[in-house]
Amino acid sequence: MPPTDRIRDHAGQGAPTVAAQRTRRRLRADRARQLADLLRHQLLARGFPAGTLPHESTLATDYRTSRNTVRQALDLLRAEGLVDRLPGVGTVVVAQKYPHGLDRLMGLAETLREHGHVTNEVRTMAPAPAPAPVAERLRVPPGTDILCVERLRRLNGLPLSLDLTYLPLDIGTALLGADLENTDVFRLLEAVTGQRLGHAEITLEAVSADAHSAAVLEAPRGAAVLMLERLTHLADGRPVDLEFIRFRGDRITMSGLLHRSL
Image: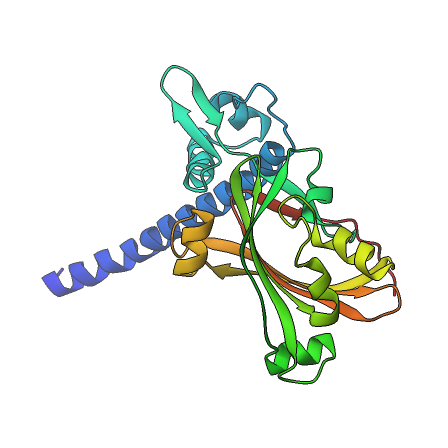
């Protein structure tokens, strides 16, 4: 057989092998990601109360997969900062995420009251002309003064969120002397207006932390943060609180109870 034919024949035999190897690697990576999702749920649900995960062989048996897949899944969780491997101990839980519900309209301190004490560092608080998009959402004329408040919110001393809040000035002025460091704005709004809050429109997305947000939240620059945009209305329908909240994605998890209706 001429050399060129032998090369062509060898290449023809090798191509399926390379493709098969790529397929196996992709399938193994898929299984590792799927297993990491299951383990992450257990971690966040306190499914390992002792703080230590079972041995790799036990996990492989429990989830009917290979130890290589288990190792890859644990590597993914380690990269997220949720677990670490300690010599002589095994894989341990090193981080905790706090649950933030999306099915009730509550302030952060109300939401996380079972997990510790929420404090607020008021970074800026001053009237400013309303940008057109903000004025439209709050139903005030463009350029009308509104109150802008930026707060760093901590849970048990750890930075959790950076909140930028826009309030109509007739309501916001009453908050200037209020205890914003230890009280949710929601409670203050109800006290000032004499009304209950009614409903809120929310949008949740992942964004990269800009240099300012990362520095304030003590997070790596460019780290993923959860951005919650929320427009809250009083019971009579008036919009009174437009917020842009950046949560550290490694310290919070969003959850809710949804009902299907057609």
